[in-house]
Image (cartoon, rainbow, N blue to C red):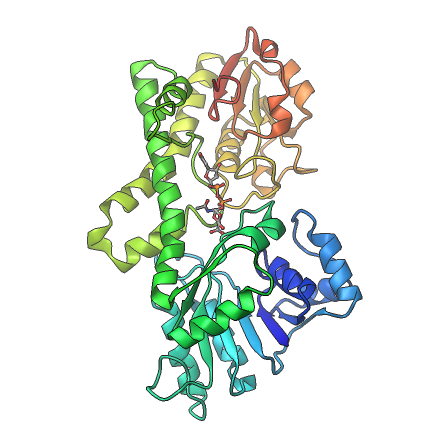
Length: 412
Ligand code: SAJ
């Protein structure tokens, strides 16, 4: 069977490659010509563990190719961005655009699967768009008659850095517009997923995806709030959490400089937007996590102004450990703010980039190797818990001021 993957980003490309490996002939669609060209040359435009080899092999054997225009296919999978707007309202225009894009090439018996994180009701929305554009076809959920086009929502839940492994091993929610649609989609996913594929409705699967990330956001907010309490009363939050987690039914996450990435810090707003009156906890958790970078900046400034000659090292810019992804990174935000204010006094250590991102342009801050920064700086601000930073012997901080937002050198 032929599969078309609409959107060749962080989710679409690895998923397309894994489907090709499972034996499907996969056509990837993207609006960006350079993405299409890069993939057709057997190369990749994003960083992900083991993805380069897989894409290269699948393109070489002819099972994966990319194009800018849709063609007929058996299965269409949509994995395009669903950001939030300025007012935290979800923006599903790319999803609806993708539906409009493929509508002209749809044929009876096709299965359309949405994977993008989406507000509840989006799969049904796709159905409406398709029904308007293709009155000749019965679209699932749009009429009582047996459908010609099957529609399902099957969210991904992969962790950046481990996408290829998790695409196969994770369980999946398979949300059909009808039970028959769910069965069709499950049959497809079971060809390459080893985890369990559990059938449900599209709306339930949409909510499940949002709930997973909101649950993590709320849990991290709790840990972040504990860090504020601990600072206020003078205890060590890492020790408090470690001891509390010895309780058999307590499992607190780790505080940090804030929550970054393009999922956990965004998806809870989709729930808040769907039910504003019902979501004080989720909205407050977002506020707690979004407030953390400002708190860290204020703590850093206290140290910096009390030590006007001190040089400052910021360790890490990525949104979490051991990846080169700087999108929505609290570490980057904090370091860039400090660089803007304290310019040449600031040294940035980030082994996952070769030069500093544009946020540091004209700030005077410099990109340094870890050892040199530790030697030269008096104030050390730990923003990311990269494994490479863990190797530092804490005695190197003797006589220096340490602001360790990840508890890297104190975690017990
Ligand atoms: N963080 C903390 N403390 C913690 C754990 C995380 O401060 O104890 C911070 C991280 O430093 C980072 C942010 O939270 O800034 C998010 O990191 P993450 O590892 O929790 O999540 P992501 O954004 O890399 O991926 C999440 C995952 N969702 C869940 O774990 C519920 C992943 O499985 C999803 O597929 C992904 O979102 C997505 O695409 O939705």
